[in-house]
Length: 171
Image 1: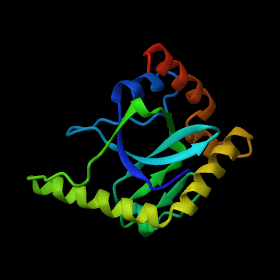
Image 2 (image 1 turned 90 degrees about the vertical axis):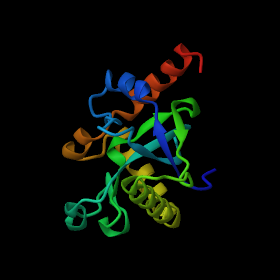
Image 3 (image 1 turned 135 degrees about the vertical axis):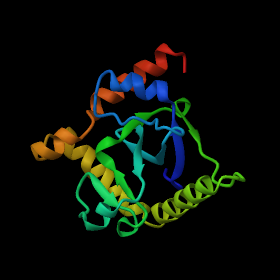
Image 4 (image 1 turned 180 degrees about the horizontal axis):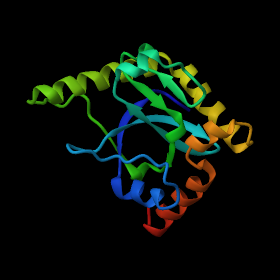
């Protein structure tokens, strides 16, 4: 049962492993630190999925919500990229503590953005869960346009690889 969304960091080694099977798996590293991923606690096909958050960009406000992309607060707070959802087990991620005292101005601004994103996500939980499930099952049932299908991670393959990764690493 979904209670609330959480912000998490996905283990970079796990992402690298998945990327070996699907190049569409998003990189979760940048020059500063690991990118946070939306910890949606979305149960799809008996598997937890997490969708990456995108920071706000001017283009987001002009874009339309579509089956694999939803703007957060009209794009003012970024977007959710459902096409890049990846399956995870509890040991593949860590929760991000959004109440940690930070000293850097940039870190505080970023932490505040994450808090605002999280508030919006929890307020709109029902539509987010519906959208993520719709994309997943449309992908699995091969009922997506070729353009959208080509943007999506291979959910079923990644579920299989997620299970193998966790078994092989005794997780």
